[in-house]
Length: 415
DNA sequence: TCTGGGGTCCTAGGACCC
DNA sequence: TCTGGGGTCCTAGGACCC
Image 1 (cartoon, chains in turn orange, yellow, green):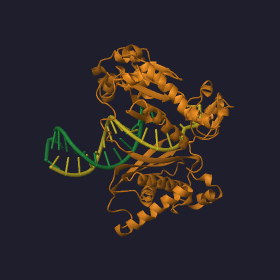
Image 2 (tube, chains in turn purple, brown, green):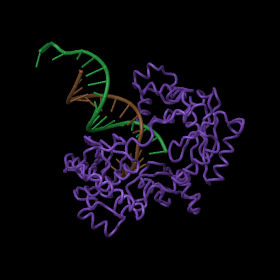
Image 3 (tube, rainbow, N blue to C red):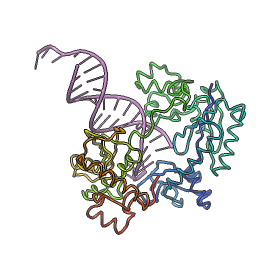
Image 4 (cartoon, rainbow, N blue to C red):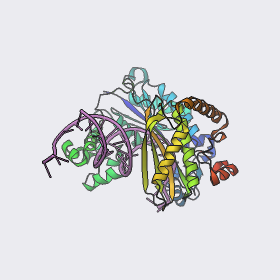
């Protein structure tokens, strides 16, 4: 029998902002951007939630619900820093810690009783240590599976601890809404409601065969989740010993939503080139080469298309990404419509570089050296210090020169 | 409710090969 | 040349998570 903690930081981004500006404490605070910008809420303080504000809500809606709320841009580097501190605290309690995202983690506490006491006691100690060492509140769910631990930390919020004792999983889950199951979103919830399944207990009452007939493979997974089982069964894996083969990212992408929809080809190309440079930069940082380049366009009416192209040889060079994404743009953009969002996505990674690229083999090495030099300059002087020329073009260039903040991605970053 | 940005995983159809 | 079946790769779209 395992003992799993799911540790979830309370209103993480807001709480970190409060450390840097204590005057925010207790006030309705919204992290995500200005109140009149295109964008959504990344995190809301508990005071803001009282006005009906929640994450993923459009900023403009949040502003309508609470005009006197304080809107702040996020600080991703601060969150990464505090996430690392959280990780450090957790490692004092178990060597088996898995950060599931920037603000939550699974900790395998199996076998720590002799050292740290029974689960409720060690959770209490962890809770206090977290507050003392990071200044942040967290909620802790304790259970025999990751799934139930996660659902119970959710029920423990804010700033609480909830222990689902072994054997009580089914009775804990039964009264909860199906939406509480991780992986059940709006669509699945609606589908389940349409056949009269409202609560996890209802779901647990259906047979595997029934669920499979209705939802296919996903139905089988759902049947397991309704029992509180992790994906691979109950006792199966012991997380960090079965070394994660999925080392490193599987895709790297950047996208940008314009303040105003546009049909200006120069602006689109300049933005795309800039996004491509950021993707290429990150490919080099990870020592990865991508074979598939995908363009994403979202029109004013919010219809979204993606168009992909696979290269004969993988690449990590700016101009390959810029050229291929530019071709995809011109081949697929319906010019009757104006564009709200443009993005580029790289996948199909390998660690080796391709023999061919748009540049012939002899010059490839010099290119690599030049790119390394620009990477270093950007490290030292900032992202906008160096550009390959194609990143800036036409009208857009003028705007950028007058106002560096006009360049997507420069200035304070959104979360 | 006028809807971000970064990811992961899944499905489904068609091409192509044996 | 009245036509099966499987495997793999590629592409497009969508659900979901934080």
